Length: 142
Ligand code: HEC
Image (tube, rainbow, N blue to C red; front, side, top):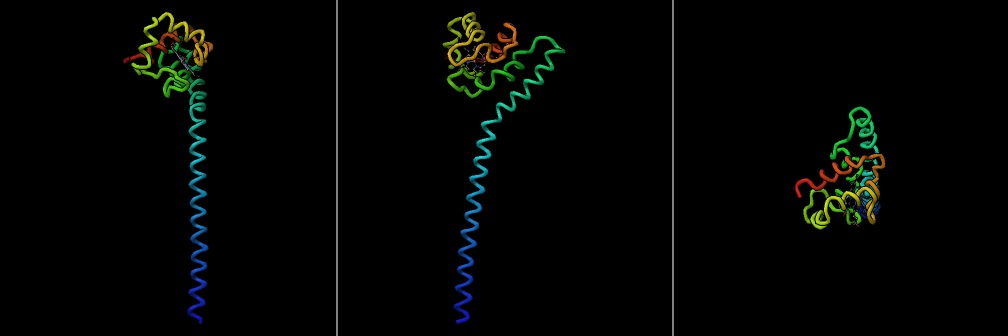
């Protein structure tokens, strides 16, 4: 009877702690996943914000920003992943039909906005030359 009892107690405890452990690990996996998902969603904005500050600081000391600087600060948010159909940086297939319109039209669209493409790619204090430099940087290698 004693043996039976302790076996019973042990297996009940074992089952309970197993469920507890499973529950904990499931909870922490879920927690990690949502944290990762949230971090992923807010990351580009955080990056842009920080990069924007440093680019603005550089601008005041060293004149026009390079295409790379403008791209990394303002355009990368959409043109790296291609959200909303944005032509991706360095992707020849994405850029061919755009460039076929002629650079003048492409630049005009970038300056004035075009469908989901915001005017000046959100770089409201960019000069025409800086936008052009950013376009040149994006289409390099296409
Ligand atoms: C909020 C997202 C977003 C940002 C930021 C953005 N773009 Fe775009 N861009 C788009 C989308 C979407 C399109 C495609 C629009 C379409 O064809 O309907 C596009 C298209 C373009 C085109 C092609 C226009 C054409 O005539 O086909 C150029 C050039 C361009 N963007 C330049 C830039 C530059 C330069 C920057 C940064 C200074 C920038 N974009 C930032 C979303 C963005």
